[in-house]
Every structure is written in C-alpha cells, then in structure tokens.
Image: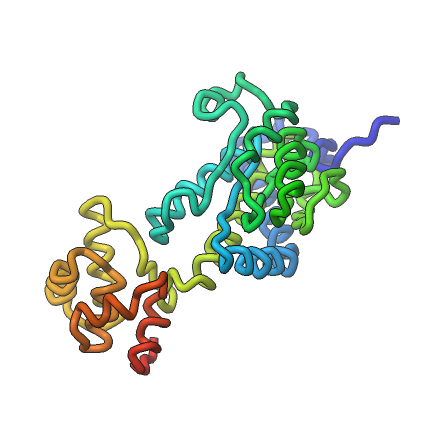
Length: 298
C-alpha cells in the first residue's frame, strides 16, 4: 500500500465543506490556520537551534540560502526579499532560489519541483560558511533534495523546514511543524503554508535580532525607500529617544538619513564622526553605545 503523507491525507472534519454556508467554511479554514500556528510553535526549540547554528556561520561571513518550490518556495522568496527593507541586510545576505527562476515564480504551470538536478545546480553558489535552508511542506521535493545534497558536499550547514515528521531528505537540522491533513485535501498553501510562513518569519527575524539589527524591538536598520518609511524612521528615533517628531526628523536629516547613526548620536550625545566609528564593523546600535560606554534603558 502506498504511504500517504500527512499533508496529503483527507481531513475527516471537512468532508462536507462544499455543503456548508460561507461563514462555516471561513471559520473552519481559520480554525485550521490556528492549529497550524500551534504546530509551528511546538517546533520552536528546533527552530531556535537552527538560529543558533546559523549565527555561528554568519560570524564566519556566511550567508543564508533558501531552496523551495511551489507554495513553500514562494513563501521563502517573500521572506528573503523582505529582509533588506526591514533590517538593512546587504544584497545576497538572504537569497531565495526558486526552480525556473522569475518566470516560474509567477506562473505555477512552470513546475520544476521534481527537477533534482536543477536544485543541485542552483546550489552551486553555496559556500562552506553558508547555510542552506530547504523548505518543503511534503518533505519530498526533489528540487530541495538536490540543493541540500550540493550544500552538504561543500560543508555548508543544512536545515530542512517541513510539515511531516518522516521526510526522507537529509539535513543537519530538521524543523517539523506537524500540521496534518489540510482542510482542502493536499492544498498545502493552507495550514502548511501558514506554519511555513510563521517558521520562516521567526527564523529570519530571530537571526536579525540576535545579529544586532534591532535596538530593543525597533527596526533601526530599516531602509527608508519612500516617504512612509522615512516617517517611520523618524518615529523610531522619537520612540527610542523621547524627542518630538520634528526634532527626530531633523536629527535624521543631519545624519544623512542613517537611522543607526542618528540614534547613537542622540542617545550618546557624541559627535557624528565618533558615532560612525562606533558603528563600524557591522556593530548594531546597542553594541555601538556600549563601546562608547553609554548606559541606556531601552
């Protein structure tokens, strides 16, 4: 008898969903998402271990590569592309690889999920200091298998994020959110997708927090690419320092729009050049303040 993975099994609680009124359908779908988030939360210790192991690699100059296809791969692309505007990461710090590239990303009929050699080739840029994160709800995606195999060959750390406990894919660390059968059989963009997005968000955000790319719970390395984000940057200065909005905007302007510099300058009272040196070498705001012997209460 063919083994059917949990994400592909039929959900007995929704067999009559096509007979239900809209309110009951919506409630069932949202309840399934709530359960999926609980499954992701249960995987927190494993995810934290992946964060700590990844931090070690980042300390050696490593970078993070995501590999995924279908809905899982698209969620990985979303997570990677949001890292720079949110945390000011340099290009390539998070890189999401999707089989078939941009055309396949927007056209689901271009399906290379089973292309194991493509995954192997796409991992050609992974180095020994890097981290390769395979993302596959079913735990069987051959594209991911190929990528992880190539990453292991060069000595990279490999992490698997999946929604089944018995994946045949090899990785140094496997993070499992046991989401079970979907409300619509096999549609892993639903509960499994919710859990996967939560795990990816928590993984990348925890990495950025631990790397000093926040100050307290503030996005102090955000890249202000539009008026809304410029206002947000000034608002962050106001929240962190107690300045009025106009004063915060002025200090941001004096700092050339450099939010970490503006914060260190305001909180320390030191000249801009001295604050710029304190932020050198990739130091975060808190580390820069400590180097200036500034005690803060944020």
